[in-house]
Amino acid sequence: MLLKLLGFSSFLCLCLFSTTSCHSDDPNPNGGTTDVSDYGQANKKCRLTMEIGNEGFVNRYKYDSSGRIVSEIQLSRSGSDTATIITYTYSADRKQVIYNCDIKWIGSKSVVTASLDEAGRVTDEDKLRYFNYDTFGHLVEIKNIDTGNRIAFNWQDDDMISYSQTYNSFTTTSNFTYTKTADKAGLCPAKEFGFASGSFLMYGKPNKHLMKNKFVNYNGYPEMKYFFNSDGYVTKIQTDKYSFYPFEYDCR
Image 1 (cartoon, one colour):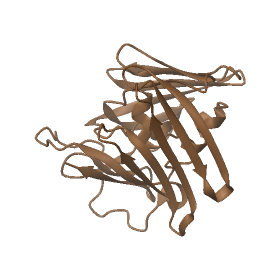
Image 2 (cartoon, one colour):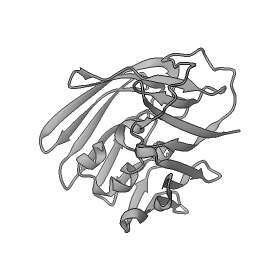
Image 3 (cartoon, one colour):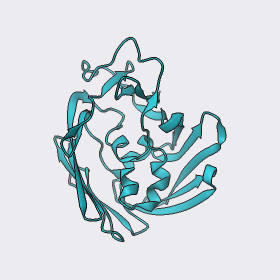
Image 4 (cartoon, helix red, strand yellow):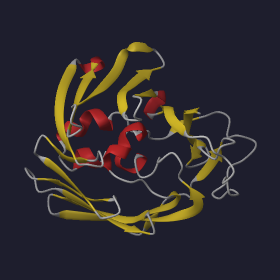
């Protein structure tokens, strides 16, 4: 995953939750769309509770009364013996959060201590990886001070239009186009960087709109299609004829 490639080793636990393509025998006869009508009448607030990830792994999220994520659990469809569990413990002064990660299927445990700013965004992890934001709350840089590896993000109209990844002095640039449809659940760019979607809000303001196309060093990827619930939240992303990302929410 991108953050692992940058040498952010403690991101291993988060990156294991990344939702790469999963396959479905039913390509949905109703079809998908890159744009939908305005859901402005919907007034429910939905929190992401489940997404299907790589090789059919099921990722589930829980939140506290303040809406902060407190746990992520990844299960294979074969049972809990392959679980990965992350719990989040917040300090009373809201200036720190500790991630406890238990990767049961390889018998690995790790602890990461992160500092938080007044808006609840992560500013550093273990004083090794630093996160910088612009005045609008967008993530604009991640830097590993041990390796010098870096990601720089460019934003326009509340959408991330490009980022540049520098790894061992080699730079790769990705560019994005967008639909006119609101990204109400903050799914992008979480999926792009290997974050669990449920935890990305700790790393800044998400995109305003859903992504349409991605280009890496000018090579394009297929246009993404979206499926929605009645409140305008994405229930499935289709990236090609057979690949889908399903989502579930708690809407109140």
